[in-house]
Image (cartoon, rainbow, N blue to C red):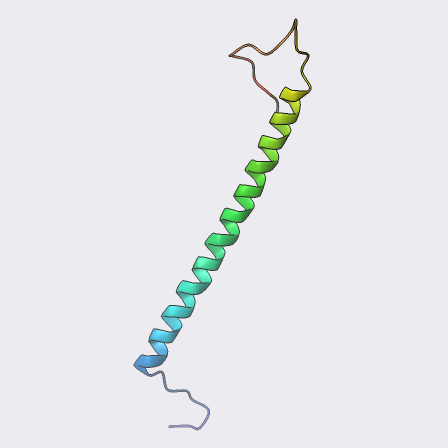
Amino acid sequence: MSKGKTICRPKDKVKDEILRGYEYQLEIADSLERELERRMAKATKTASVISDMPRGGESLDAGDHIAD
């Protein structure tokens, strides 16, 4: 066996699996954070449009669509 070759022991495999799981959880957390920020921005925009509407006269009907 050459000196430069690493031996993969069962303990190392478990560590690698744990690290992969941790990295996967971080990716999911980042993805969820981006999705939450996107939805919050959209909700803020929608709330802004609604609050800018006149109080009387014209208003949105139930079927009206607010542009994204």
